[in-house]
Image (tube, rainbow, N blue to C red; front, top):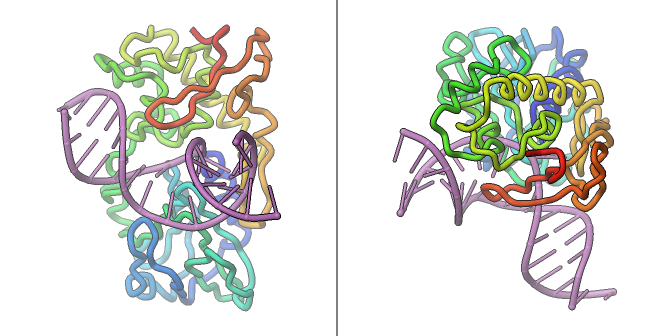
Length: 273
DNA sequence: CGGTGGACCTGCTGGC
DNA sequence: TGCCAGCAGGTCCACC
């Protein structure tokens, strides 16, 4: 479900609920996520004021007092919902973080590809899940020349290249397709053969697409929702993703669907070369 | 080393 | 109506 815009939308929706709150307890009902949830390490964090709600790539970061940060990844189907701690557990509700005002943050994830991990705030950048991650796409660290350097000598197609978190983070399947369309680049182009100026245009396209999606509250294809249960609207703005057979808005040719590295790719055969 | 394919899970949809 | 294959927004590891 979530790419960067969805996680950022979630982060913003959490702010009013979590700012100044204290984490007072944890209930782990189903520890079998992508890696087992460590109940004891979570419990040892409590009680603690939540000092900040951040994000790195697709990880939501809850910074606690006492040099602890909770890393939360939603995988493909995860959600975080703020509700009263007295609320009934629903199917696929796995963990609850209990807050000092009687509310709680419920981690819900049908496919259980998500993660909930405790890390040391002072060594966060060195954490194994974060250490290898590339630049944030919306910060100044991402540049056309940086991408060009990373692509030098790479025979890999540009679309899976963009989805490689070591190259740039936060660009998943939807936004890789959309950014390549916006930049007029064919998704199968070998990364090492893209010209310098086109990398600049691609960086611009990535920023445009992600920024527009955040403004729309993310993309809700089946079940994304922010912590208040509200869906996003960016699916109404996608130009190619999920639109196989529809006419391209620029040239009118039918959008195509192919598969790269086991993932669906959508593109316009007319304007992406 | 770079690159691909499968594994990890459950739920929904569409075709027969 | 019912069943079942195929597909889904993300990593991560084994293997070529």
